[in-house]
Length: 249
Image 1 (cartoon, rainbow, N blue to C red):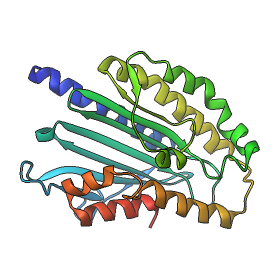
Image 2: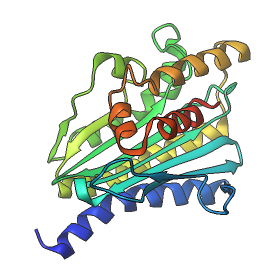
Image 3: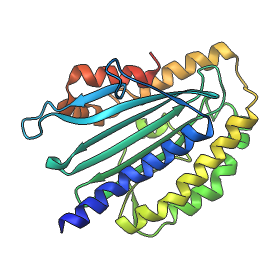
Image 4: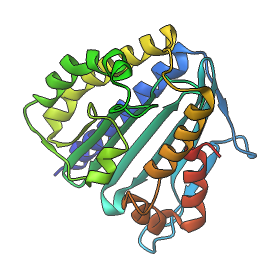
């Protein structure tokens, strides 16, 4: 593969994440929370011998109806990794789902994860499911039909703590490009939920408690093995600090 092609494919994963972040920040006039040095909230430094120095950053934005928007980018050319994650967190006492997107280029293959994180148990609250998630079905089915994608292997435990409308796939470059409109589809649908609001079937206290428990599971190294690989790259202390931010601590 030529250097020009490598740069193109590496930038494609970042462009999807960055453009989505820019849209959310602009939509809600969010402001970035900077680190003590005036830069990103966290700078991620490699703990691997083959990659020295800074390999990533964590950015936090606040404002509007969101609690915060958290992004994490890790780029390590030495191991052919270009990974970008964003999570748009609603307040803990809100019934509106959180929005998340992972956009990754690893070696010759792309991968993505796109979802709205439920705020209540869908099986026990079918009215909530029908109101909040069922309208996403057409968009979900269209994304699932993209030629050149295949389901990524994740555990049943990981699926159980997200939504059944989660998209998590590996993709060819062409398929990954075809994903962009579907990310916008999920994003625009989420905007509507944020702006209309949702009547919660459970109390504010129960929403807060469930959100805390659900986020602890989503970002648990025991449930998601990616955290072990991340800590091997950026160190245990930075990995725990990042998870604490994502848990809302």
